[in-house]
Length: 379
Image (cartoon, rainbow, N blue to C red; front, side):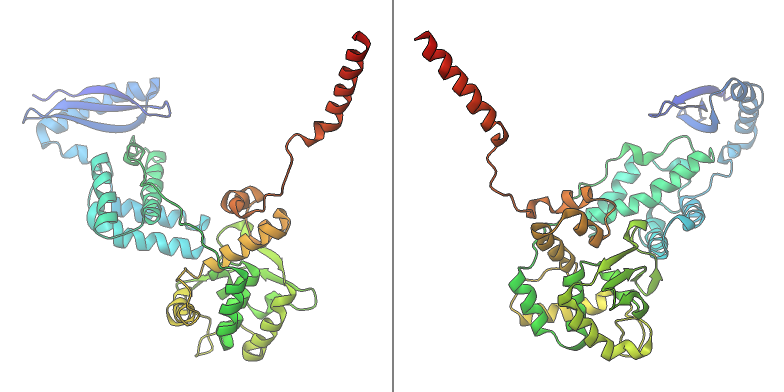
């Protein structure tokens, strides 16, 4: 006869959960979560109702009771993604669904939530990097989907622990920022033509994110106030919100940008739609379309080393932090505060010649004079 014992498991956060343990007919020790916090009431329920019921199920039904309708990773991940949809922009939601379908479903999707072990997570991460060639940053995003799912399962008391807490995220090395010089910026703009010239000029002279540029509409452009309103972003064909709530902003239209925006108005202004349009008169599907068809060729034409088109933003930031107020630069970039701007671009700030301790010079000279006078009296 199989005997079931009540167990108590303590999480890293100090919470205690009730569970059950027993030795199966093959002599292997098994542990099962009861999804109950360790409270006097729950403990009484477990001892008087659940444990006897579990023990009976084990001995009569070959342990089927222990399945307890635990959902699979795929089932609950899909539920988790959908019930948190309102907290994310459309592009992020669609990306999470894509991650589930392409990077989680085939490997972990059919496993019950309580059957996934830290070793499974480690192997999954390793395969994403070594076989699927995903970057560490992308793997970290994949982890977010799983981790949020497990946190939701913890809230519903479906599981008692999150296996991802036992597995470190892959180390992310931020890509080195290699901004274009002012001369290179002018060279790129001069060698571009038509709408692409106007696009890269807008990118270099606003520091806006690529998706934000694609999402610009003509009613966001105010030539009289010299302002541009950043309200939306386009990624993979989806017109959605900006990256964060702080990214919704009004930015200054620099004088150097005005001729290019007016030239673009001549091309697409009559549509009263998006500023940058494709050949069919619709908004551009994704920045990849510009990157692959124009940007790469433009850098080759200019005989410049390839850099991602996102470096237009980095270039704006590095040039501006050298010459402008950091608060203004932060506002233009749509950062939450200037701390984020400083962390990313502090290396680019000019370091003026400062004589450290200069404020003490006058006081020290007074002390020195007093010291000299005292020595003269003693002498």
